[in-house]
Length: 149
Image (cartoon, rainbow, N blue to C red; front, side, top):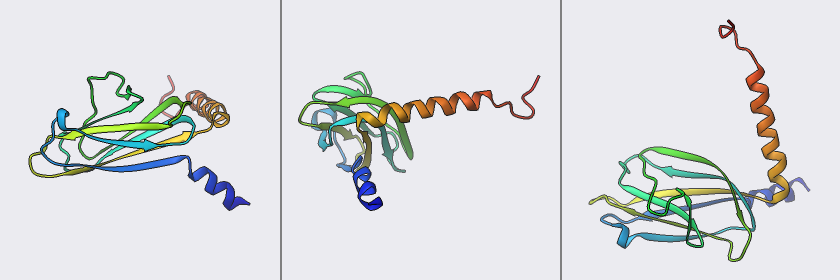
């Protein structure tokens, strides 16, 4: 029984590794589609490995509307950095699909960027969000030694 529940919850975390060929521009960008289940995107991770040097630029969209970053003309770039992005975006109409697009301005090397999404059913969102809020409130009440005045 526990295994069946674990298997069900593992289906909430999605991961896609996308290789961006060298020498791209926005006009020649790579577009990958990310199929997910119906639910709320609660967290996203964008993983830029070492060597990207800010030359790989990406965005995430849903049905042509920007999600990350929120402006259509913007993008995210980094080097050796993982963005952990709290979200609250509902995928409620079919197809349940996220578009991950970007381009690599490096003249020599292709680069692989990883996108991970945690998609939760609606009945998980309120309890998880409430728990995080309660823990933050409690931690702000704790007075640390040396911070007293």
